[in-house]
Length: 191
Image (cartoon, rainbow, N blue to C red; front, side):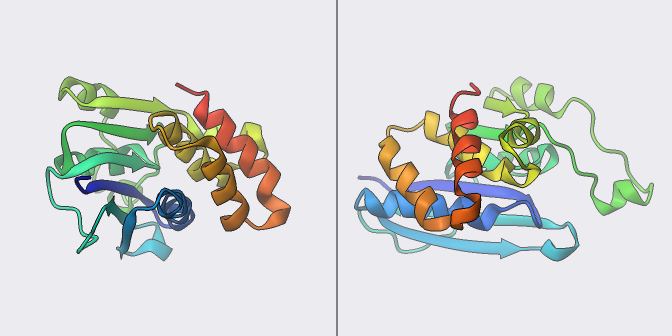
């Protein structure tokens, strides 16, 4: 099998590390060689966080180059737009419609770009945009937006449901498991 590449992007504190652990768990259970690499900006200060996940028969490097990502999973609209150059032709861009103002917008030095979803679609990208924050709140906590987006991603794959459920059970603390399972299901059905 040729190597596949997925980028998980967001802002510090949104749960990209849990999302990459869930995905890595599912891929390992499928028997793939998996490499994961995290690249942080000022993640504790609301900066960009990028996680690369590569899988296949044999993976030598986790780094995803421009034009190489089969999928980008974004927890925030501006981060989705920033990662467009990494998406390969025919790849999927899954994003939350949530907008988090970066520091230049907060300080008034810049404005948050308008109609990012429209601009991304106009570029010919296969875009799946969902209000992951609202779905996570429906599940019980805004912190489950990451798991909602993993549910959306799962709906685009043919990985067995039981592997996703097992990954949730292995990666999520027991006291938060049921609400994360609900968030995952809401994401799977959001398309």
